[in-house]
Length: 203
Image (cartoon, rainbow, N blue to C red; front, side, top):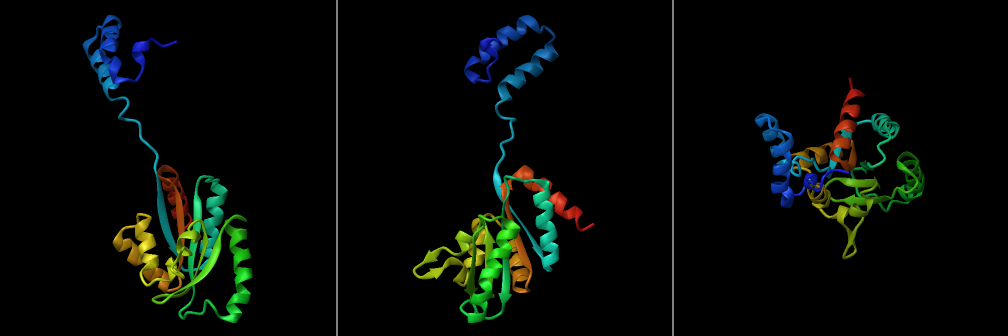
């Protein structure tokens, strides 16, 4: 059992100094250990959750990326896909409503059976779909209209999850040009590894 003085607690620093002085008379060694005691609690890097976005102009590219993520076994990652179905507001179109079931099943198969799915119409972009973790954000009802349907709704959501202003405009421009947005939420270190994995697919 370690001596009580070695607990990483600033209230016990004085006692620790005395203990170290008895066993480590070398001045340099003592100085290093003293610094470790004083700063040990500050050098531990805390993991934090954040978001990562990447756009794909072809469905096969997106499918390949999702497969790579799933093979990587990034169990803590939460995936979402935002895509454009048409330039006009056709979310209530009879034919699209019929296809909605097939789209929902497709994305549940790709992202997991627990994934949410929905369609909405944004006046600046057109008819969009959202699948996965962020579906509830885009489909959140505010006075009879979903957040995604509001003019600046998609932009506001991207800014709200921490995407920089310039990047938000860039991603929405790609979305408007029929690109798919892959949105990942997870711990920063895990996202770094996944990002490197996705970049390797393009080499």
